[in-house]
Length: 267
Image 1 (cartoon, rainbow, N blue to C red):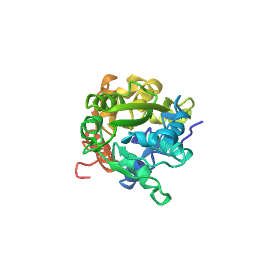
Image 2: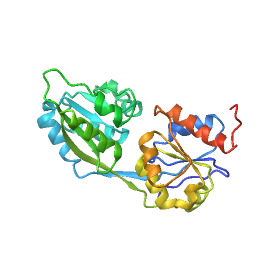
Image 3: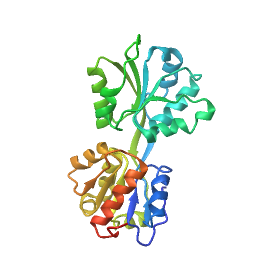
Image 4: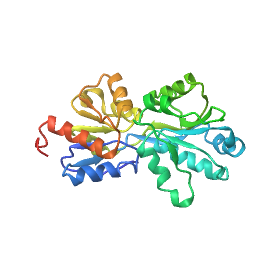
């Protein structure tokens, strides 16, 4: 069971997977904003998870790039990379948060990203990924099993339109949590802002909390992909930063609270 000690008057609900809300929570609580952590999703193994180390061990040299589009994908990739004997790879990551998974393990000889797009989204990742001189134009893309995820679909399509051959492996899945603490859930429904770090999280939130309760809240998304998912669900009061990151995400949360007159305009 995912249990959380509910503050008496939480202003903001943090919905990322267990263990992934700490950085945003630290920033917000450091600014006096009461938070409640209530993960809406959890990760499970995808159908291609066992294939990843085999392909890396046998074919790593075939790929110009390995493209990683989320911290979870990065963690799963590193498991497979270690199991494959740590072959040489060239990494491209979608943004700072994903890159930090590799940076945190740099001292252990983990490969570091060699490409990050100018903006952390598929619209920039696909068009900006450079060709490797004399390369194969092949890309390995370990991703989520959510085939309809906008970022993943747009990235794969964008690369293929440019002439890259993409081998996508569905190495993990993101699913709604199956058990929640009832008291924490009721407290979450009273919050002013819900933070959303992925399309899966907002879909799970609406499924569990309900559309009526959600319409009364502000939706603070980590980036444009999550925001578009919220829009497709018919939600209102959606905000997201131009450049995804913990600090910019926290700023969006503060903007939401100011709009609701829960923070002074000069804060």
